[in-house]
Length: 346
Image (cartoon, rainbow, N blue to C red):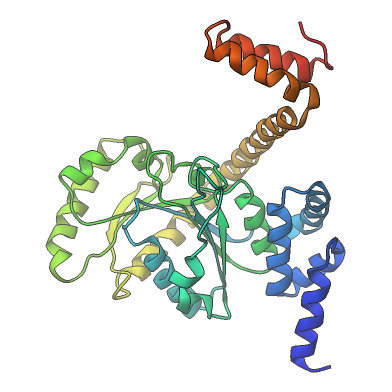
């Protein structure tokens, strides 16, 4: 069988309706990009049978996860996240690393659709054999990430990728959830300072482990240096989130490929400091617990939406709330009592 025929047969096997989780796990361990892509599709699926397969697969692969450096990348639209991610990813693969990029695209509030254009925006990195790019829709999940980003991250680690970058949608003030699933949170900013500094939410800066002022090239170099000093001053007014790491502000130009080695050096220093102090294990344990509670909340909401008794009662409750006959809290308690109380209202 030729190489092309083998790839086609592999694709048909992995893409069938109910793939074998053991077969998928074997493909992922062997570095099959087709198997990895199919596995991420399964964890993102809302179908119950797909979720069953996905959870079996994750259980098989869990011992092979956790070895990667997990980086979160956030920043306002227009700051150059995709350009920076591509340049940084190429720098890392040039250093012998295998890089996975989980790029989250915003979903339409009206249609639920996404453009998923990150592979187009990162064309060079997408062709790199040591890189894997997976665009996913946010699906309305707050915090600039998709609900299944955590599972996708575990799958890429099991496939041998030693650096995982989560690039968020860039929606602004709710864009902090990525910090709850990565080891290091990078905040990408544009040159400007002054008014721009005033517009940055304090909360997101307090979560940042590293601030990178991008577009520090050409005529923007003086503005970038001024911004660097202003962000450094702002950081001094904030309490670091870790006792073993003090955030810094670096300059970079993704367009010219400058400053990327400094960013990676800071990421390595952060990982080493956190690991040696035992903080990394504590951080990941806390993130796992938070992830469990997120799944509990999502599961309860899903149960409410699919429960037949709840569906029958909902129009009445909505009308009562809209017309002022009941408070939202009272209506919510009535619905929860019906669903969680075994179908009986209090």
